Amino acid sequence: MKRRLFRRCGHAPGDLAPEDQAAVDQFRAMLAAVRHPQPWTPGHPQDIAVRIGPFIERAHPRPGDDHGPEMIAVALVHPDTPHAAAYLHGRQLGYTERGWLRCETTAILGTWQPAYRMLTHAAAGLNLPDDVGLPPAHYAVHVSRPDCPLLRLGPYNQCTAAESAAVHINEHLKKGDLPGEATVAPLDFGAVNAYHDPNHQCLDDLLARNLRAASHRDVRTPDLWVQEGPAPALSSQGQGLLCVTSGRCSRDDAG
Image (cartoon, rainbow, N blue to C red):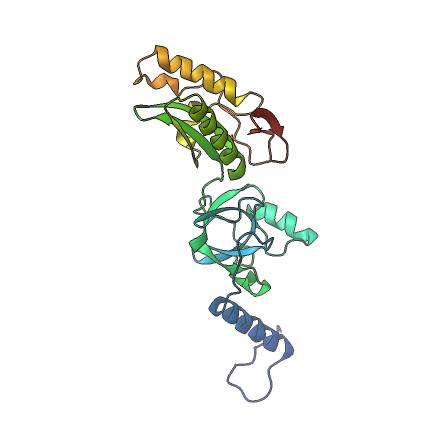
């Protein structure tokens, strides 16, 4: 005959069993961490706790894109990182295929604490949903005149690289007394063919070609936005970026 094992009721007299006491302590630690999160300081290399729906996930901020007042770039990681088993488990649950994501700072609970683990998808044995509410962290530079768009550059995998390109283009336009302004914006994934890949080409030459084209065409012609050839690859991994410093084109392989 199979014996039934009954667990002790929490209101029963006597001390809790060691395993029950450990579960109670873990739950209390989680409540304390949620109620009193440890503040996260932008720019510090610390993992953070991010709200993903009703769950809390561990996220690693991307160096260089971790100090924005409203938005930073993060990568979701398994809560048991850096243990070896965490990588395999994270791959099974969809943690490792996300790449860099844009995260609003209002979704950051604070610095990651191990007590948050029981609130993650991994602890519940659930896959991360296809839509975690964090769009891919790719950036672009939009160059436009008051009467029309001139050029779209992207993707840039780091905001600092896009900002560097925008600053150089604005200096070039100002020096040549040319109308127009370059601004940094999120990459529009619905119009990837409208972007010129900034890799392996000089921004000065690319800008000059588009300015010449704009001067010979109707400013309302939309095909000034369209890039000839295949769309740029939108890899989440670090790519060599064409950054411009000191008035010259140089390749940034730091990603």
